[in-house]
Amino acid sequence: MSLAEGGPEASGEAPAGPLAGLRIVEMVGLGPCPFAAMMLSDAGAEVIRVHPLAARAEIPLMDTEFDVLARGRRSIAIDLKRPEGVALLLDLAERADGLMEGFRPGVMERLGLGPAECHARNPRLVYGRMTGWGQDGPLAATAGHDLTYIALSGVLGALGPADRPPAVPLNLIGDFGGGGMMLAFGMVAALLQARTTGRGQVVDAAMTEGASLLAAMIWGFRAGGAWQDGRQANLLDGGAWFYGTYECADGRFLAVAPIEGRFARTFLERLGPEAAELRQGPPADWPAQRTRLAGILRTKPRDEWVALFAGTDACVAPVLDWSEAPEHPQARARETFVTVGGVPQPAPAPRFSDFPGPRPSPPARPGADTAEILARWGVDGGPAAAAGAIPTG
Image (cartoon, rainbow, N blue to C red):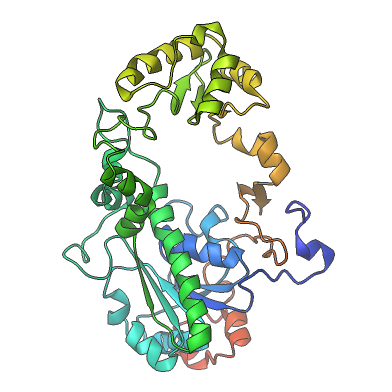
């Protein structure tokens, strides 16, 4: 079913998704928790976002139409500093399958909304918690960001050229890979168990631990003597000439990754006679060979090299920028990107053959759906409205 055509909605089918029927309460925060909630929503779960009543964006473009991580969900605004607001949130938790929060340890407990209070009302609730360091340990109460979390995991120290400080990556490793993805996986695992046992539990997702887990294969290589601690000294960290990025004549870049022997042979054959000295030899030879290949690839523009290797198993690809990526033929064929509310963005992933999720909808304004959510979930908002803990108009 074509994403561009609107998926199941276009044919009149109910846009179920594999997580249809699940109800999740998301405490609005930054980065990884909204990403995890987006993943569940993209897969069909009903996720409602709980905004502070006087919501103020903490980062630029948050709570606007450009807040892609907030897509597909409705919003309720609650003043959790008022007892009536806390009571209302507990009423929602009682009717939910899961709750997700990304505050520092102890914040939800101080509000009277910690796991103990929520499980007293709903023993089957899965309570997801997203932090950088985890719920305990000497750093639990201290601030941090993606960069500091992955610094302690060992991952940051392995990134970048050998003759420079560790490279600063985008916040994909800690926030979204080691954080949001791990929380989404943990929520689904615990929700499955809750369905069979009737018992919920706390999912403690820490970005440092998630980033460490992403590097599991490297830890195995290192233990087996196949990985050196220095940067740019290994097969997958830019040390090998046959696994790296190279500048072309036009200042654009090419990704070269023919690791396997048969792929390397195809690469060298297409490269031509100038590549006669290149061999997949011992690591001691890699620096000189990398320099040799760099000189060759600087002789033509990027897209000429792309055309030369097109249709082969040479494992070569252009390094695309943000504007080029959605226009690549593979992305267009797979509809890897969609436009939601006028905002281009990645389509939901992975794909589901029989029960695709709904096409994403634009982010909701904070509190815009308060009355609708309360009615749909069968919650009496009267006391909260009377106390000014929720918007009334």
